[in-house]
Structures are given as structure tokens and as C-alpha cells.
Length: 420
Ligand code: AMP
Image 1 (cartoon, rainbow, N blue to C red):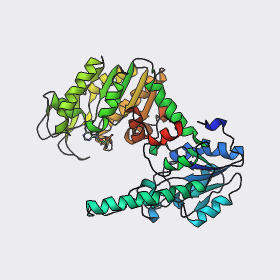
Image 2 (tube, helix red, strand yellow):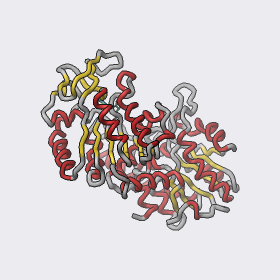
Image 3 (tube, rainbow, N blue to C red):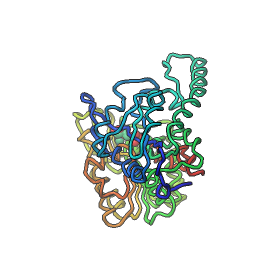
């Protein structure tokens, strides 16, 4: 496997899968957050500096295999030009004749942006069918898309003569541009700098993070995090649980949870997880108090009770002071920290304090020398909202991809390049 640093792009046309799935203003369709564009600059600039040219492939939003104006990548061109300090060319169909011609005439130092790869069903290999379609129809349509996908991948591959994957956020998907196209470049495929740094950060915690090692898991559901937690148990010393999934654990232990979120079919699973934690000598911290609301609403009435004494008719939507104190202390005494998922319904100001406080505790621990890795859209946005991104060791660009890697799963986009 090549390291991008050791590859000379002089005279090459590098086909790069980037993640420019950036947020756009609903009215003006201008880019509102350029983080993902900035994340790819190191890779693009290395190729240009070597004397190569660049062909950028990405998706934007979920057009589901159909062409939709609001998801066109032309909306990001000016932000891209500004960040690159040069004008990019644009191909309005990622595998059309214009793309083929433009790629062929690309000169050293030039950059071509392809239109949204998800305008084609072939990218994800999923047919754009109405939910009402019968199983038979779905099966036949899927087979047809898979067949057409081969031609789509071949056309994409024909645009360049080496392949760089720098889109960590989609590395867990076996899509045409993230995985399948790499098959065409057995000797000329590599990760970009962004994926390299993501892997480095995750491998650092998975293989020998300093102790004490604390995992903080939040968010809505236990079922989404169960595999990660199980995979981390042999490595960690402390497991902090927050967010909606708290209540499945509290209920499983016989507490009153009122109307709080609960996965009734996961109670046994929650208990067995606590048992496994014990067997691994992992100390589990569940919230001891909570801010409850009388409805799921930013304007609801609130009260504070013990987590296992949530009154009937109320639901716990954030961790309260005592819990914040206990969690912060554990975090600030840790040397390795991973955090995925909010501690409460942080989208509503009334229930954002718990998540913000945890972000601050992780930043404090980092300033005392801990290695911290934060991933998942919500935790990352809490870190950004509190202007703490530069106080965290590594802020991951991939929520789902990070979780799957932490679960010990093979990510197709990683495997095809790394070969294991
Ligand atoms: P996830 O995608 O599983 O990481 O969950 C994130 C979502 O969990 C966010 O939208 C939060 O608003 C939500 N969440 C966090 N805590 C709670 C809670 N106590 N009750 C209901 N939803 C919650």
C-alpha cells in the first residue's frame, strides 16, 4: 500500500473521493460550514504541488439516485475556489461525455469537480423506487442497478490514473466512488491525509491508549452503541453513559423512568452489558440526576430529580448538576478519552448544558495531557458550539464510520486500500 507522502503525482490525474457533503443555506444555497472542504486541502495541494491534476468526486445530501438541483455541487464551487485559491472546472454529469473530455484535457495543476455521484442510482447500488413497490419489483430493480453499476464504476475509473480516498465519513459504505472504483487501481490507490489521520487517531486508542481510559457514550439508543461498547470493554477502565439510552439501563435495574426514552426490548441486553463491564473490571457511570420535562418541547416545564425517580408523566432530557460533577471528575482524571453521542437533547437550549459541560471536561482533560477523540455529528457540533475543537486531540469527520471502526468491523473503503 502506498502512503500518499511517498507517491509522486507528477503527470498523474488523481481521482479523489472527498467528502464535500457540506451544509448549505436553505435559501441562498451557499455553503454555511466549510470544515469538510478545508479537510481535503492538504491532499489536493500535495497533488498539485507534485505537478499532478485533480478530479474530485463526492456526494452532497441524499438525492437517492435522481438529479435534483438543490443537491448540485455547483453550489459549492465558489467556496471551493476561495479555499483553493484557484478556479476549479466543473463537469455537470459525473460520468457524461463532458466529464470524460474535461478529464482528458486536464493539465497539470488543474482541478475538476464532478457533479454529485449520488445523482446516479449506481453510486449506492440502490434503485430509486417508491416504498409501494412490491418485493419482486425491488429485487429486480436492485439487480438491474447492480448490473449497471459495473459500467458506472468503469467510467469513473477511466477519468483518472490513480485513486485517493479521503472521505472517511463514507468509508463504511461499499459504494462505487468510495470502494468499487479502487479495484481499477491495484498499484495506484492510497488514502489521503485526512483518512490517514483518522486511522491514526482511532488506532492510537484501540491499540494501547494510556490509562485510565474512559469511553463516553451518549445519544438516543442503546442499540446503536451496543457493539462499540462491547468491543471497547476489554480496553477501557471507565464507561460513562448518558443521553436517552440512560433510561433503558435505569429501567432494567428497576428504576422509575416516567415517559423517558426506553427500548423495552433491550432491557436484558442492558443488564448483560453491565455484567460484562463488571467481568472486565470496567466501572460504569450512569447519570444519578436529570433535568426532566413535562413534554418533548423547548418550552416545556422542567424539574430535577434522581434519574431512577423520574415522576410519572415526565421525561429525562438532560443530565443535572450532580451527574455533571461526577462525570467531569472521571473525565478529568483520564489519560485516554473517546466520546460519541450527546448527554441530552442538546438541540434545545434548556437541555444543552450537560453536553456542553462534558465537552468542557474533555477539553480540560486534554489540556492536562490526555488524548481525546470525539466523533459523531452531535458531539462534534457540541464541541464546535463551545469553541473547543482546538482543545480536543482529534475531532473525527465520520460518525457512523468511526463507530463501525470502533466496533472492530472492516470498513469496505478502508479494506480495499489497506488490504486487511
Ligand atoms: P444518536 O444519533 O443516537 O447519537 O442520538 C442523538 C440524539 O439523541 C440527539 O438528537 C438528542 O437530542 C437525542 N437525545 C439525547 N438525550 C436524549 C434524551 N434524554 N431523551 C431523548 N432524546 C435524547
